[in-house]
Amino acid sequence: MSNETPTSALSAIGVSIWLDDLSRERINSGSLQRLIDDRNVVGVTTNPTIFATALAKGEAYDAQVTELAAAGKTVTEAVFEITTDDVAAASDIFRPVYDATNGQDGRVSIEVEPGLATDAAGTIAQAKELWAKVNRPNAMIKIPATIEGLEAITETIGAGISVNVTLIFSLERHRAVINAYLSGLEKAKAAGHDLATIHSVASFFVSRVDTEIDKRLDAIGTPEARSLKSKAGVANARLAYQVYEQEFASERAQVLLSAGANKQRPLWASTGVKDPSLPDTLYVTELAVGETVNTMPEKTLEATFDHGVIEGDQVTGNYAAANATLDALDALGISYSEVTALLEKEGVEKFIVSWTELLDTVAAALEAAK
Image (tube, rainbow, N blue to C red; front, side, top):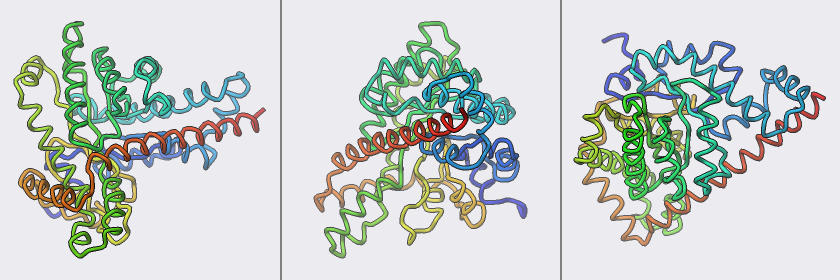
């Protein structure tokens, strides 16, 4: 046991560690492979913010931008080429992990344009386009869990495409996401797809819940309010795991699982702490439980590797306490449904801002390359 690290201990209890970051520099330098080898990383997630940051710094994209400018590509076409190339290259690096885990891990996620969050037909079309362009079995298409996104999830899964459902904040929406997944599997089965090849994760956001609720607790300012600070995010995620257990124990889910389908694992997203007074591994150690994914920024990954204390399942024995936390917030007048609706709206808006930054960055690079 002497050579066990906190990240290997996390993996041993059934948590898949995915990195919440990707860049061409990371791919080309061997950094991504090193994290696989040394930090138990078995997947990668991306989003518009990550790509905007990667493109804004360094020279790794210069040659391709010059090529795309010479070919007269539009900004949107250039972004599509650049991001899908990164995802395809990362998918190749993770292919051995994918093969070794029968497709459960070794996954690289790419998001549909955030502006399509309220356009089901547009999301479905782009999901298929991204899937075909990346052309790797271990890619995953990210679709936000908006009301319109639910229809897109069903149709995309029904087409045999693996989906990472993002921006889930409420337990009610989590149930709706699982329903959309099961409906998609039923469609896929009817269409003759091999259900075993279709995978999905449900990305439940953690730290943003605390950020918003803590702001409201500070405004209330009572000792009782202060005692509830930074507890909502973990409580909410623990109850999401309970939803996962309940929904996949249903007869409907069991019929699909017996036909070869996979469960849609909960994925803990937004796991970097926003409040510097909190332990930097809080959303890793407190949400440790089997059959989950934790997608971490590199800073959180390194903190976990360095000093994370992994003490087994921290979730399934804590449902009563988690419910008590949410009840206490409700008693203080903090509306759970209002907070989660606001966070979804802000989440989409933030990604649209990042997408615009990404387009602006590429537009400037294309112009400079002419």
